[in-house]
Amino acid sequence: MTHLSPRNSPARPRVLKTVTDVNSWALPTTQTDEHGPCGDDDCGIRDVQDRLGDRWSVLVIVELAKGTRRFGALKAAIPGISQRMLTVTTKRLIRDGMVERTVYPTIPPQTDYRLTPMGESFARAVADLADWSRWHKEAVAVARLRFDLDHPGEL
Amino acid sequence: MTHLSPRNSPARPRVLKTVTDVNSWALPTTQTDEHGPCGDDDCGIRDVQDRLGDRWSVLVIVELAKGTRRFGALKAAIPGISQRMLTVTTKRLIRDGMVERTVYPTIPPQTDYRLTPMGESFARAVADLADWSRWHKEAVAVARLRFDLDHPGEL
DNA sequence: CCGAATCCGCAGCGATACTG
DNA sequence: CAGTATCGCTGCGGATTCGG
Image (cartoon, rainbow over all chains, first blue to last red; front, top):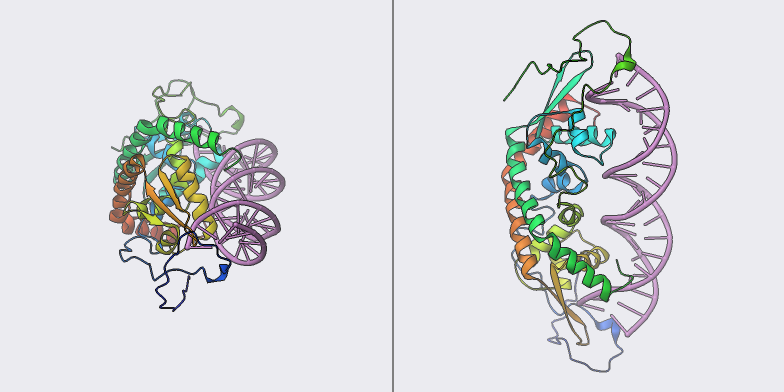
């Protein structure tokens, strides 16, 4: 909570003056601009971000968007993922109502995963973002290279 | 939709048989289905996901989409964020070419942040996802409640 | 006001082993 | 084949302090 100086002093930033009174550097005025639909704790993004944030959820969604998949097929289609993370990820997606699971009690057990209607809706939204990503990935890479050249040792 | 009778692969699966030879549970066949545009290490999403993953990048983008902001204004508009994470986040966004920074060497220093054209493009893509989030947030919440009721002590 | 530097807890994730 | 349990590492991110 940034409280500020109740000082009404119109003293706004002076420009290039030899100064040592560092302590007086306070907020010039109440500047919390009014428009905060976002900026509140969450503006509704958080729920989605929880799924977008982790490493695997998006990849699982994208794969399931192609159709129903069994556990092993998912694992095979997402090379880097471990058994554990696949079960964890699918379980979280199920919890969020994005994915449904069907277990067939055959002797080598089989489990099918498929998107729910909401999951499909989400998959389309994600696909749009993936398109954006593919379209701009080189521009991002270039920007990063330039930055790393100009600012070595940062980030 | 729901296709049943999943088992048809020729060789292995027996159904509901008293078995103990657990060791023979091997892959039925080479099942790496062919379509892997995604599934490779990254299908181009990773670059974006790096920014979507962390807690603050999206919020900063959304705020900057409203216009140029100084450091303090950003901090005020995003209540939870700390000084450190704001500087870190903005720097990462600058590195990715999403944000530009302008420093005015006044005596109380002033720094303005604004989206680059690419940043604005990204902001629109993100806004679409935020819309989806707002539209479905209650459905997600309900799904989670149901899950937590049925499966206590999980996740 | 803006930012860098330091310390530190904790969640995410991988590796491994075990079960039905 | 599908899933659970346990351990250890790593990096994000919060709190705090210092500096121009």
